[in-house]
Image (cartoon, rainbow, N blue to C red; front, side):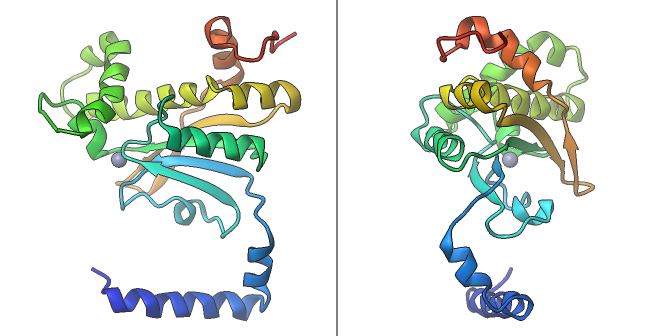
Length: 216
Ligand SMILES: [Zn+2]
């Protein structure tokens, strides 16, 4: 484990490296942020956001929580989405899950996990919605991996249900919402190729918050 003291030495090295490349780096960074991406991922220490994307400071607006959940009454994630869409005008929103997710695993077990119960209930709801598909898979890794993917898909749909995303998309044709899974074994990112427009169309009858037909 990196020591507490080492963290500050690492930070100094990091500052120096950036200044060597561009002496005004931090002045420019301080002036404003215009990230093109909102990334919503898991808090898991093995799944870094910017690092695995090769992104620099200022490029990605980040929100992380256990099992990358987007719950409509979570003030935290909803504030992040609203700010990113309405004020930062991000062009892409990514929900990124990962295989071997402890949160998803916990939601597959018959255990009382205290305060985590209501949080992980969101994943049990995903399981219920896709029960036929999941139960048809062999118990173990295959079912677990598929629930990780379906959880990403459902959380991405939850992003699309927000008024901020619907209104911005109807006016600007952005942001587009994507679902990714990070494969811890290989380090690779997998794009689940969610059909954003089709999902938006499909849910429009029930979740339209714009007062207009988004595809007229
Ligand atoms: Zn996780």
